[in-house]
Image (cartoon, rainbow, N blue to C red; front, side, top):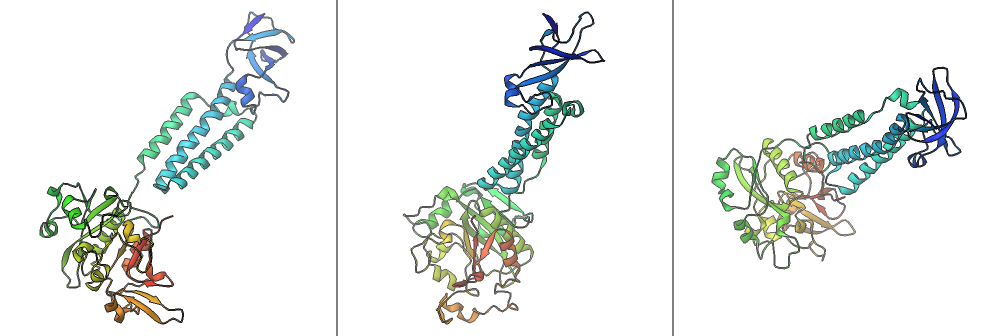
Length: 388
């Protein structure tokens, strides 16, 4: 039996003028899996071309042994198997850049990348003589994978965004729970920082919260909360130190928003922990205190408030009260009652939040919804993160 330079046994069907033998042989297991390229036949056979050694006298119908795998077959297998892998990796990377930390959307993007890669590889394999023009090699595939990985790693992910437009850059100091990093208001105001984000709640702060905004039956974990120091302009035109506690997911976005409010000199009377008001929401609102986390239910209901999860914040509540209406349109309740004179949205009063307010635009552009857009109640002070 004459040996050529491939790796299967088959029958020579013809000799081409340029001295090559066309060999008919059974498909390999790899080709049974693939079966898409131009060398495959519908009857389970495949045709390959092999160079005839000068010393061999090969004629049609001769049996030959192919001792080396054909390049076309190898390239087809590489294209069919590796291209989907590239598509999956690209899908995962793009999903991470666009949708993190929303796992369902990230998974969907990865799946779409895989599907598109399968379609692409099938189209290329079905093209006649695709392997001759494409010149696909292991080296080229490796370079393609590396270049794709390099592209993804070079993309700068701005993780200060939940949804909407891109967040603005902000000045923020990252700190730990050590009380050595917990400056007094005076020291914080002297610092160059616009805001300081703590990676958890410092012990001294948590002691103020225990039994108040963080009761014994609190189902929210302390490690899921973040402490924030912010600078803000008051109604007196002076810069004041504020503090907030919020969910770990929302905290960076709050830092970004309050940084921009500070740059715009947006006036907020006070930003203190609601624990300074014994975690009494009405007492805090009467004093026009802006606050976020407080483990409590919605007023008049058993359902937990978004504040209980650290996903909501109230801004200048005295001038932006929560108004509940009766079915006939009359006012049923105003919270706080002292905010009744400020129910109407007067855009000329910068203390009252309207859709034209800078604070409305900043929050809604960064994934929050405004209670003033609700039908009943109208909660003009309230912004909460829109969970999807």
